[in-house]
Amino acid sequence: MTAATRPLIIVGAGGHAREILALVEDLNAAQPAWRVLGLLVDPSHRREEHVHGLPVFAGLETLREHPGACVAIAVGDPALRLALRARLPRQELTTLVHPRAWLASRVRLGAGCQIMAGALVNTDATLGELVLLNIGASVSHDCRLADGVSLGPGARLAGGVEVGEGAEIGMGAQVLPRLRIGEGALVAAGAVVVRDVPPGALALGVPARLRPRRPRVPAPGGA
Image (cartoon, rainbow, N blue to C red; front, side, top):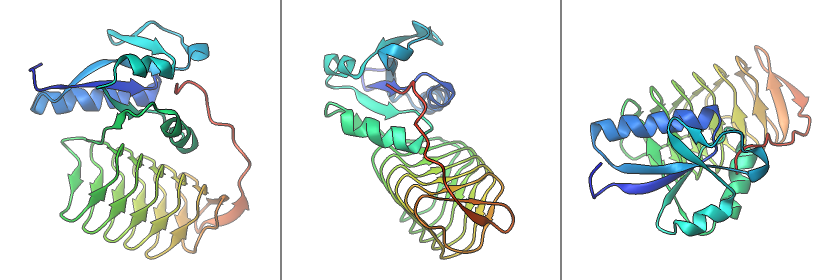
């Protein structure tokens, strides 16, 4: 690493956190940019003291000991990502784009976005804060993704789709053009959405049918 690298703490220590660590390693292989200080979890869910040779810190108060460090919130659950953002002690959220992702011109990314390998974002799309595009996901022209939205591996949004805050589009799901996915909705893996999905609803099947979404308690382990 060079003196120009910036310190980074990854919030989370599960599978997605390890994927984000791999993303950072790939970025550094192309051009050193980040110095990962460690991973951070809730004290009650700390299972290991090290992950891939990096220390696992316990508790968000640890961030106060590193006021200049950037933060990557690396948990898969949208509601938990947004809740953790509200608890951060003024650290900068870093946006991470894998070198093998593709972003067209005039794409706008909010703070804390994570764009994984093979993801595609086309022209004039807008992504809010803490949006996660998993491996091979694609967002077409003029889409609007609010804060905390997650696209699973291979999910596809056609042009002009709007996705509300904290909604999830599951692995391999497809959303037809100019539709609206409401806040907190879940599009199940493999579903094909042919009409708007109301806030908090579950859409599943081909074509997708709508069901009430059962309330879900976010999985622990983020911080």
